Length: 148
Image (cartoon, rainbow, N blue to C red):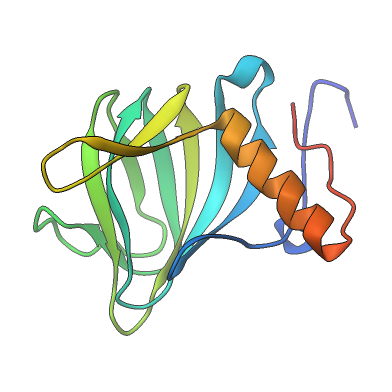
């Protein structure tokens, strides 16, 4: 395979717990800290809390169903989604199906917000890489080189 092409089999990568009911499987960390790709699994009825993106996000629903909590319709498998730079959203998994979504984050950070809109936690590529490394180390796994 060309050095300009990167691929990874998601089945060999672990699910990293994010919060109760949400886990992520990292697929790629971009060079220069400019973003990441991951599959996010949301258990039935659980949600990714309100957050704001710096940079755009693209996604594809892989399985299950989910929707944005602004009352938007349920998104079915195969649905493409785009979140604009600066978008604030919250994603809810269907109560009877959960959801797995491939997200490609182009931007340096995601800010998690409280009910008043204040930033309570920040995720960036560095924190994602550290969580992956720590998870592997705690379980005696050899982390794969996902930085490309």
